Length: 398
Image 1 (cartoon, helix red, strand yellow):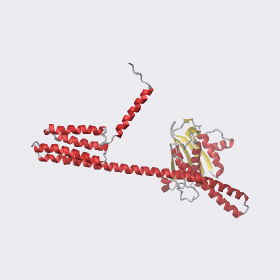
Image 2: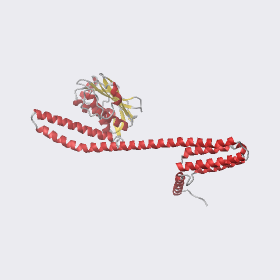
Image 3: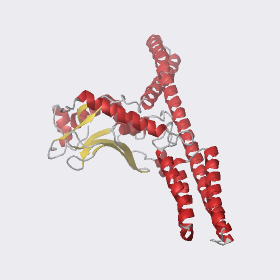
């Protein structure tokens, strides 16, 4: 009779083998001997027989019995009661057969010292294994507690940020309504302060929500993003916001798989930081470079401002880290948001700074989804209006 294999038969066989494997793993000695334990019991029995049958070579099987028990414990790490039982059985059996040889005059009395020495070796192994298990258990508990605390912190940030957004938005709307109706100078100044603080609170809540969600698998919605046109759009939006010398540096034509909205938030945070640490007329330059075809992409924001003090550089991307250079109005979350977005994309963010001369912030992105050759001057020309094109030819200032 010819047996024909079928997917159903293969699946049943696979499930049966998997169940058998799980059953073997679940066996725990001494109640249900596992394969390793059963093999050791057989070798232990043959070792005792060898000690009796070959008295002139009894030291060899004796050592093999204790060494195999020690190695087995290193793999199995039995609970305390089974360990004491094994130790007692091996000690009694080996001591008995060795004692018989001494009584019969085949071996001197000093040979009996081998048994407690081997038991001491086994005890040392048990002690080290117990220490290892205790350390692993403690590390596992600490890791689980840290994971729980991080999850609780992330959930709190998400809930708090989400709950704050609605009342802040309502209060901001009423404040803007009052500002349009107030005519007095003092009242106008007061309402301006309220509007500024509410706007800052809203920005904090939004950034906290983004940072807290950065570890979510669905945090990003990747799509092809042409970084040349993306960069020009960003610079056009920022140009009216501050009296700076806005410039485009090298602008390679590369397209990456990225979340356009999240990437825009990160670049906005870098430009906001650059504006805050520069004065009227200072340069702020935005560049996009691809070092090699298929290599890492760098989006760089360069400014000619006050720079970052050397001692603050290692902590500049920490949450709520506000510089001490006389700029108290920052949220302390902008650069932390940049790092969260960069790492969510599989990249990172770097900073180089020269106090008193400015800084370079680089947002690194994984290799390009596709690449095109840059123009001879390094700038993408798509969608430029005539004024922008003319200014760019004079030096890139916007």
